[in-house]
Length: 310
Ligand code: UDP
Image 1 (cartoon, helix red, strand yellow):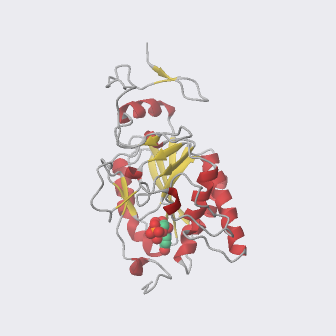
Image 2 (spheres, protein in one colour):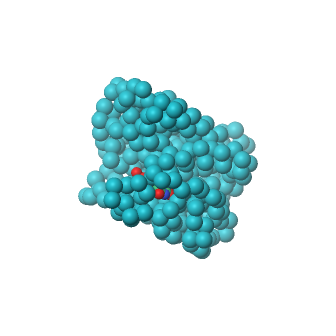
Image 3 (cartoon, rainbow, N blue to C red):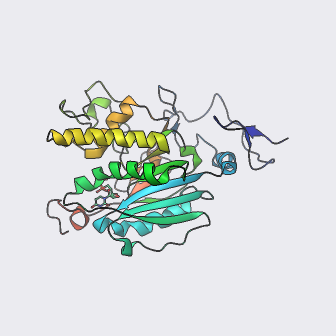
C-alpha cells in the first residue's frame, strides 16, 4: 500500500515513490545549537531539520505552481541574470515556477534557459527619483498583481530582492500560509536592539518590549490571500504615514516587521535563506547558505544615494 500524507484541506495524496526510504526521524535528538520552533509553534527551518527528498515526494503530486516576484528597476536590471540562473539551479527544482520580473527596462531582461514548466514574465514597473520609493512601492504593485493576475494561477508567491543569488536548495520546506525569514544581521540579537521604527507617530512603531524577530523585506512569501493581506495592510500604513510626513526608518521593512508582530508567520526561515555576502566569517550555526545578497556599490545603482552616479 502507498504511504499517504494528509494535506490539510485536501484529500490525502500518496507520496511519489512507494519505495522511498529515509532515516527515521528522532523525537529526542536533533539540532541543539539553534531554536527550531517559535513560541506560536511555527517551525524555524534550519539545515538538518527536514528531509528534502521526502518533502519533494510529498509536494510533487500536488502539481503546485510557485510564483516569484522580483523588481529590477533602473540599474538593478544588471542583477537579473545571476538571480534567474541561480534560481534555475536551486529554487524549487522540478516544480512549476513562474518568475514575474517588474522592470522599466524590458529590453535588458536577459534570456535565461528555463527548465520545463518554468517561465519568465515581464511586467512594467515605474522608476522613481528616490531609491526608498522603489523598494516601498513594491507592496502596492505586488498586492494589485496578486489580485488582478496571479489569483487562480499560482498556489504560492515568493517576493525577492533581485540583488541576490541562490547557492543551494530552496524547496517545499519553505511553503506555508505566511513565510518570513530571519535577518542575518539581527537573528542573534535582543528585541530592544532591533532596528524597528521607534517613533510612536508611525504606523510601524514598535516599543522596546514588542517584537519577536527582525525580518528582512528581501525574501518573504506564502499563500496568495495571506501575502495579499500583508502587503495591502503594510501599504495602507505606509500611505497613512506619508500623509503625516513620516517615512519609517527602513521604509517597507519597518511596516513588514510591524505586521509580522501582529500576524505571526506560519513558517520562519533561518538566515540560510536570506544571507548577505559581506558577513564574514560565517557563524558555526549557519551550516550552508541558500540565498544571499551580493555586495554592491550603491553609488553605481541607487538613484538619490549620496554621491550617486545614476
Ligand atoms: N530596487 C530596484 N531598483 C532600485 C532600487 C531597488 O529594482 O533602484 C529593488 C530591487 O529588487 C532591490 C530591492 O528593490 O533588490 C531592494 O532595494 P536595495 O537592494 O537597494 O535595498 P537594500 O536591501 O540594499 O536595503
